[in-house]
Amino acid sequence: MSTGKKICLVVDDEETVRSVTSVLAKRLGFSVIEAKDGREAFGICKKALPDVILLDRYMPEMDGIEFLKVLRALEGDDKVVVIMCSGENKVEMVKEAMDSGANNYILKPIELEDLRKRLIKSGITF
Image (cartoon, rainbow, N blue to C red; front, side, top):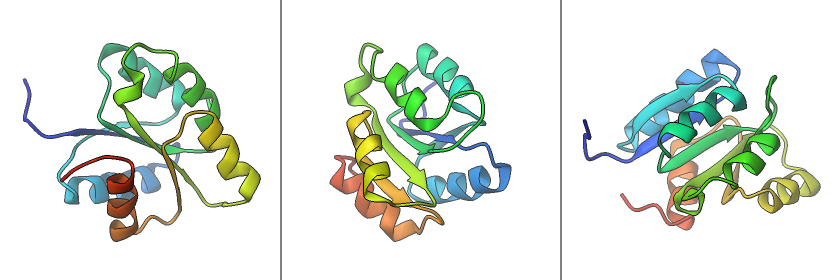
């Protein structure tokens, strides 16, 4: 049952952050799926890969870096745009995320226009 919309998976262990991020993704026209950690997100991705993943860096169970490593081992993973979301932007943290397979990196709290620009820069069209 396809709506024709691009699908965005929002992964964050904090319910409020997940909810706010989902609202932003919906405002950009995405259908949204949510996951509370990397393990739940990976289960979703094994069934069907989304177009975009907005991924929290720090989570219990499986954090963002661990998730990226297993995601990037899946067939078709290269079609998924992953934006790492974090409250920190130290150079080494950004580098680790990018080296692990993130397409872009965004600081929390996420602003709608900043998210739109990063998605466009990562190849997503609206």
